[in-house]
Length: 297
Image 1 (cartoon, rainbow, N blue to C red):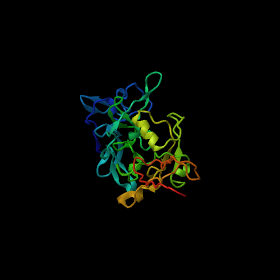
Image 2 (image 1 turned 90 degrees about the vertical axis):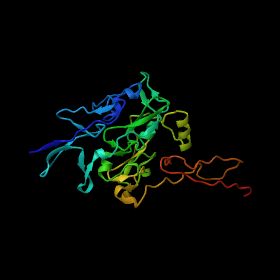
Image 3 (image 1 turned 30 degrees about the vertical axis):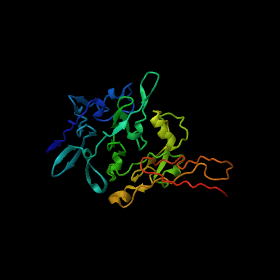
Image 4 (image 1 turned 90 degrees about the horizontal axis):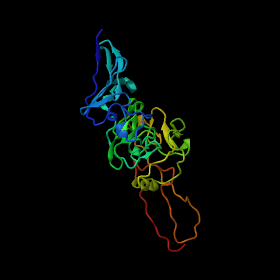
């Protein structure tokens, strides 16, 4: 009986945390000092996987745990390849895991000076599920480092999305701001989740407020986000992965939400927000609008 094992490691790196994946429970004053979540090391500028008899890792950055498969032709193979939809063989090493550039901003730290979150995390966790964080020095550019099972340069897709046929840079699965389950696609498609591992005093704010906070280095506080069920995608879980294959359809942009929504107003000035909560399409879409001045009614 023949047995073959894929080899991993060799990807370029400068810190241990850039190899393998980051562990959400690990904390440090400077995230660049975090250890790898699976024991991988960065030695002389290259990732070295922490292989043992029970656990072996593949891909250049040790980002995938090897799995055993059997075929009559090849025998037992310990590999990074898995069976996806329609039994298609998918090599997870074909999908990047982190590496996108991100603006770190000024991070928030606890009383022990351990980093809680950074404004740049929004660029590495657009799906809202803790898929990745922005690693780097405060006020400088860093890179996205993904959690276990997340892929793409910005950590926007989970392994389950890829096995269902999803592709990086085409769409993001979940993550849109929501107030109720009805904001997250059909009943069976997704739900509005509120993570317990972030601050719980988030208040409604417009996209313009969020951009101003980003410029001023104010971190994003906790917010509820859409979490998609398997086989559903887009930030509001409104499309099936099948519908987006081949470019036949695209994810929808949020319809503009006006605040105030209407009424009678007595005054010479009125501030109107066209992207009021829970509008959350700034990553994918633009809002074009025209102002008409009314002299007499």
